Image (cartoon, rainbow, N blue to C red):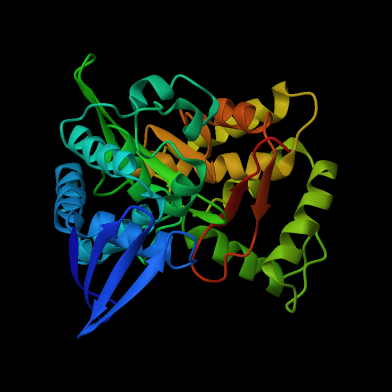
Length: 345
């Protein structure tokens, strides 16, 4: 086997089973199998001839998942490639990698997200087949972290290992061939933002400039303001609570005002005790997903997935009560509430 121009080396070739000869000009340097450099050189030698085909398969797999118009597609391919080659140690690994990429292109040996959506929460790693090259926690976690300005964590990974594709307005879309419909999915990883500020910014500025029930002053940060609201709101009448909760929504709401308010009222009246922070978040999710026409909102804690079905405000709030979710209230960067799903804690 030969490898040309690797890290400034003219030629590398296997000559003995217990080592590798490196030829630089007229000199030959023997690297024994016990040398620290041996495995790296052997690995590079192993995958060099397959570099082009691996990158081609990666690019093709992304193109069929609707990433073809993304301007940095080649950069993303290189980033994925540079990650996966770290996990190719043997001929068997190399073969498994190439076979898996071919299967992905054929939409085989991947996760059926239609089935996963039936769960409330799950771990992606546990559902992958052991015959899939990506069935490796460390590899999946590295791929999960790939993101850019317009790409959030998990988007690239999920289009590689599931039957989801890149969405236009939402993050992912999923064909449901059995029911002859498609589903739109929005993803939020650590500190993902729900909604834009719109109405809530005007409401907060109004609180800062007028006397109010919460003791808000001009120098208060958004986080302090929301802490004051959360502390005082249980003491107010239901009508006052409804008005406040409706006014702090972050989205320009496409839902009829009377219908929206009626749902807030129903939650306040029917639940024995209210977790106002989660109700505020539920209101943001309800308006945000309604405007996007998103069928699902998925919160990610690395490979752990929380699947929310934003059908109505009551349902969203009820789902949020079951899980450990960190909520942030800094909206001054023209974004809505931040949210972090904390799995198994």
